[in-house]
Image (tube, rainbow, N blue to C red; front, side):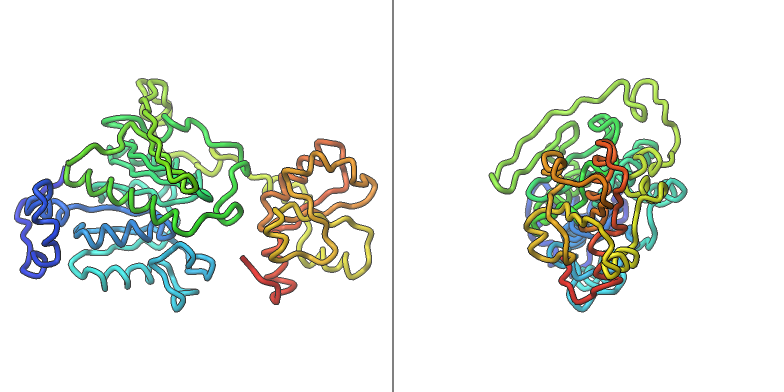
Length: 385
């Protein structure tokens, strides 16, 4: 897969990669393969940080990174490529600076944009391997489909709280992501790391495994995780490996594919509960909630987060009823009064609003943006997390 013709190492590179060169499975030819290779990393966050560091240190010749975000203080608990002084700065600028300082021999290419159906093929076609470090379903399906169409290996990783997954989806030699997950979960069912949390060290473990799988693919050594899903439980310190089969009915890589070009992945993954409520006029803004509280309106304000979150911050006058406990607490709520629900960012409370409406509550609304928006627009003195 990797063309090493006319690739030479400098004296500095012989010294830099000396510990590679004396491994028989790598050697001079393997280091030339690494220098000749190109890898695209989608996301410069929790998974992208260790990925980029280790692939750069290993001497992968050309590394592309796609991201469009800026560094936030809340990133630093796990996104180790960024530092405190980078807060507010482009993640790509921050990452490029650290990687060039680590290994000036590696060419770092950056794409400050959201990967979409319009640009994905043009970006991915220029790289040998794609590594998925994203945290949302539309982009995962987009990356998968683009890699299938372009016959590229897709090194997948995902994380949540204390658990992680890794696989190599390569349709030419095994299953793709859709063979494992034919359809995404219902919108809003799986919380993001911002809502559900993640142990800071976990993306370091999973991202490093992704980097290892990438290097194995480049060198053509070992047994890559093609047709396998590696599951990691940090609390039990256990790895499990599941065998995956190529689905002959897969709509992208199956025997008779029905998806032959990139689609609208946002539409495919569905409208989120927040979007439904927004379009239905069942939201209140932080400013509107503040006015209701100041005017002494007869409202019930419910916080559907977890107790550990309620300890960090809360809107005064709110009652804590975690989303998981809401069905058993419904009889304690007065349907005749206006009920406003909130969570951290609006996702869980949107599901809570839908639940209450299904049970016959008509005067329920969601706080748009959750307590994060409240802090930003109403009370910036409250701690954020």
